[in-house]
Image 1 (cartoon, rainbow, N blue to C red):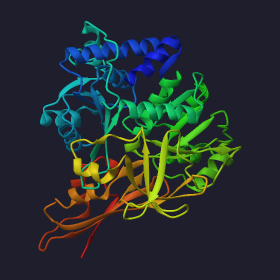
Image 2: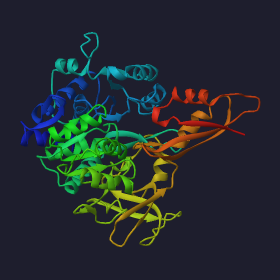
Image 3: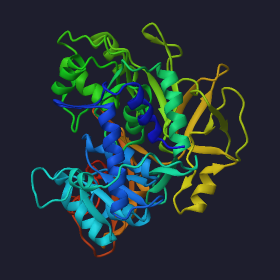
Image 4: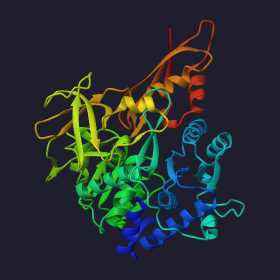
Length: 483
């Protein structure tokens, strides 16, 4: 088994159909598959073997699926990294993941280069941007002597490692297998009724599990095209929705709000988009109502977490309304769910407890963390850390979080991770990090700090300290000094 077989099959069925669109650049399935195999050959010549790990720390550009599926074909495990992370955060993932090679983009070079130097990780540019001194993927591929077919792997071979769940103060690497991601993609294709004439718009970053599955694995399995945006622009999104005849638009509520704010009063009509699918954070009733009433949008709400690949459930629609308002739907094909109490005992219909998920999509383990794996993965059930109830028809209703979590524009922020860093400041005796509601982002991060006796520090100094070591969305909007 190999996840790259999805790309192979679509290349054989639809060789001349567009697979990836990036501005005016169009990569067709036959070419994309050939490029992925050529990159697999280049990995071998760079000393990468089956089971070795490679990081991808680049934006949504065509080199991303080439690197990703080339690694899959070679049996190389991929660690996906947010290129906006600080050098400290990237270094942790490179070291914890035992990463031998990292793909970086010139736009985000400084933190990746610093982290790689400290971790002993080799670097390769995704694109030299015209600088002949920079060795990039294109050059490595041109020098590759072979383009081997996808390796026949054990279904439980790790395909991707995505860091999440920093409940201990540091993130854990969720190991997603070729079987798990294949299963999630197939179930998602069925749920979305996806086909080769679909067009997906990819604005959410591909290092995110939701984006990688819904914007790459799913369309590549169906033979559809995906249109890449390396950054968010309301005008460019609206233009490409129409120009590229987008039918499926996975995103996050923050993107929908910005589109609604800019185009909601302009008479724009998005009814031609078959499915707008927000993920990463709950969709408020007001935002849903605005999208339907002012943009004539077809909006679906679902649920998923990284450890599950991530798609877990989707609420179907009847006409322009959810079948059950407030629900994230029933589990998709091949997934079973239950709700349990504090002792892990199953609860009855309608009772609230921790949501647990079982299915072929669930991760194998947290990389190198057997205690954490045993805590969250029991007898095949993934304990999500989210609170929910399930009704008599099997529809799931998320009611809160058992674990501490702040959702900022679709990104998870774990207070323990920020507290661990803020508490390391020499002037801080203790601290607390928490979330507060925010109209634009859903939530924003706030902090309180108590200083050591005789120590002094201004809130701005503490925020500067955090900014030097955290991704921007994790930095508290405000740090209050308390007695």
